[in-house]
Image 1 (cartoon, rainbow, N blue to C red):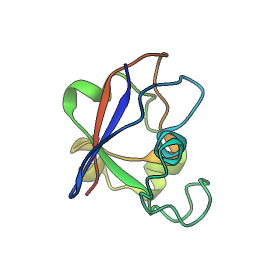
Image 2: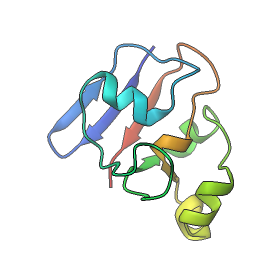
Image 3: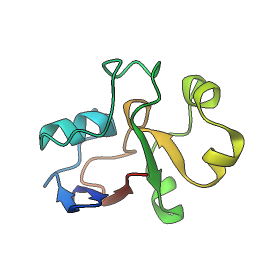
Image 4: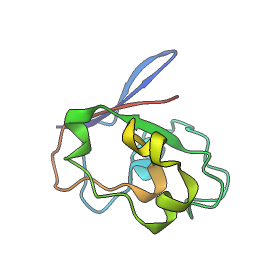
Length: 99
């Protein structure tokens, strides 16, 4: 299974999904720039992603950094920070949209 990033230019597939890598690191595995400017510390909120409702259960819950950086409405719509979001298990199938 893998992490797939849907962008305006198509779908970019990582080929693998790793429990110990956040979604920003997964994008970096395939050299896909998703907008992080702070190096993955959650300070810039530049790496916002959107998870479909079915995929929200396959990742870690929003943490304190995300609750500070994202509005309640954004979280309800599936927005997350890729640098703070981790798959719940290896070999997960995730489809991520970029806003």
